[in-house]
Length: 265
Image 1 (cartoon, rainbow, N blue to C red):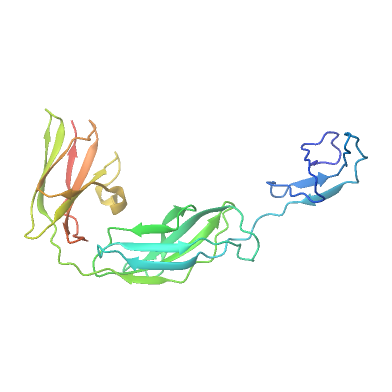
Image 2 (image 1 turned 90 degrees about the horizontal axis):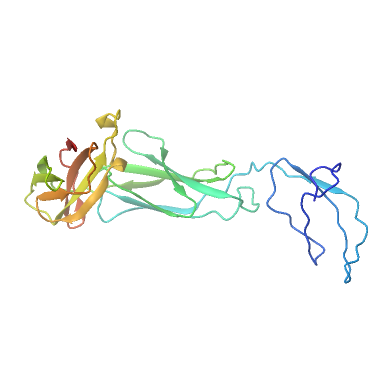
């Protein structure tokens, strides 16, 4: 194979016992020039064939839309599980090349048209949307994107309404610091009914307004806490932490408590 007939040395050579050969991977918009030579059993070589050339076309065909897209309310009542099948062809029916990721779109009471929520790696066909509001209608779509940036058509909209919950959130969350351990200590007032508490923490980076924190910024430190006090020892000096607590009752999760903020000395 040559990329320019004027070259005197081949950039690559390939051996095969067949009369056909697939050269891959290649570069879009690059012209490749080929000629063939037969080699005998005693390594005798024929003359080279005439040149044949081909230009690799630009991949501008998007993947097909992911199939069987479904949205189901999770057992907590405030999370929605999304599932889909990976496309196996391009939108034009050709072979699928370079599937890179999926884009999930969501609309809620604040917008009527689904807007981009997140992206999911092509290796996955499931996403759990958590921390949703109670008694709220959510609408979802999904698309697929290949490694050239071509995006498929969006799937049909799937609509789910989150559950109404009477789970009461913890109240009067307080925070203190114990330098002897060291540890951050959280205490709160328990609601009348609970099975356990979910302890959540976010890191507030310098220059980030507190109101910019979203559910995605919080990680669960514990989801099985059964008393109204919690010690966080996995802390770093100089870091600003934001805490909140939720109630778990029979798998239903309350809205968050008030937040508390502490800068670890």
